Length: 474
Ligand SMILES: CC(=O)SCCNC(=O)CCNC(=O)[C@H](O)C(C)(C)COP(=O)(O)OP(=O)(O)OC[C@H]1O[C@@H](n2cnc3c(N)ncnc32)[C@H](O)[C@@H]1OP(=O)(O)O
Ligand SMILES: O=C([O-])CC(=O)C(=O)O
Image 1: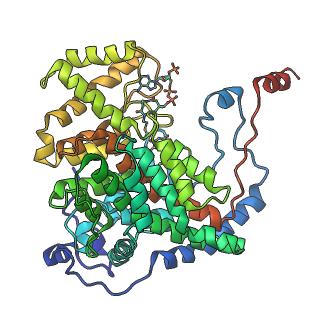
Image 2: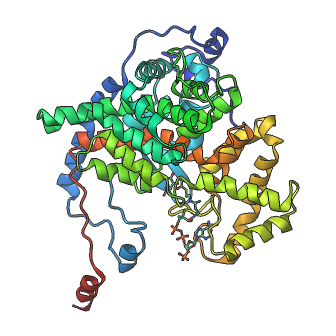
Image 3: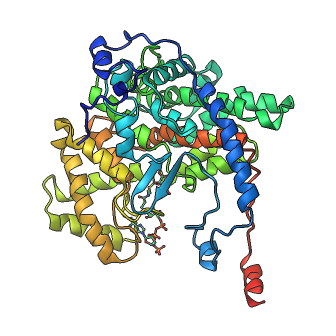
């Protein structure tokens, strides 16, 4: 269970008490002007640059392990070849954000109640601040960031026209990536680069673009939802008193649903970063290393997220779970679920939502989302949530017996969609778009770090099979 009643941020001297904020109600809490996120990043830049300088000076020739042919042929698993500041993934214990696990983050990061909007889950703004600066923000800092994002959230009319021109049949993720790339029209980084900005200053317009993009993702996503599925407010109106996801939830028609709104906050906060090697984060970093601006880099990341072995798995899980429910009925026995799992495996398909390239235990994000379900009667009693949870107990045994996957446990995608479905968001081709709002809060901070650290263009050595054989025979 989440410790909903612990006044976490309220313990810090600068923050208003959580109870006070909640009692005051949405939009009525006043905050003194405070440090902006850009000021907070500027503070850490010199020490990070110094740390990199020292690493290079002291350890440039130290080895981090050997490269085997199996690494080259096996998707580079396990090779330590990327710098990534925001989070580290441990195969047994899962993700930590600047050293903080998900439960740790839930204890210290400001929630809606802390800034005067209803909600007890982590605000994605709080996670963004942590990922960018390594520091836990105060409630005032998060409120200030929320206000900045609301002020920058409206879409330019050229982008609205571009989104409206997409055929409804175009997958929402393809629309999303195209829309994000189009915003490069207004990139401050691209404009500054063409004017000859100094390399040491690259990070500043990179951060400006990143904040601007994060601010606009909800409206882009909501406009796509409205155009394709006809749901939501249609004009993506932004309430300056609401947080980023409070606004998003309102735009897609869930503004009055506190459970859904807080679920979206939790989902988006904890999907944000999963260290650097996953397909979407890695892609943003790779494309950004060519000094493509944040819009282009993140658009490329979204196209990777749209693959079924990565972010699209959450769409796949729901389709698969509903087909199972149709085949075996609402109160399926363990035996029926096992049979269905075997049928999937024997048909040569993967069981979506299971397995992981790094994790070897159940994904702590899956656990966090399951705990959210346990705290809410509307989810606890849902037949689809119950089925997904039952599958999570049975599938590991079947996948172990099947003997292929190195990790038979559920990953985050196993849990995320059934909650959306239960709250009435049933259009599951849209689910990965929500993941796409989230991944920006992890991938874009690294782009900023890449620029203040002066990271070079990424260019590993590749080999043909013939060249490899020739090398190995030497
Ligand atoms: C947010 C995220 O991206 S989380 C991941 C979301 N993706 C999914 O849930 C899709 C299902 N899972 C998978 O396909 C995989 O487990 C991945 C892509 C996540 C990881 O892939 P890998 O690191 O290659 O996994 P692993 O080393 O365990 O694979 C070994 C074999 O087990 C198979 N395997 C892995 N997971 C599964 C699964 N869920 N069901 C059936 N077979 C599986 C692989 O396809 C591979 O088979 P092969 O030897 O015939 O090619
Ligand atoms: O880490 C990975 O490879 C996939 C994943 O779970 C994520 O990107 O969130």
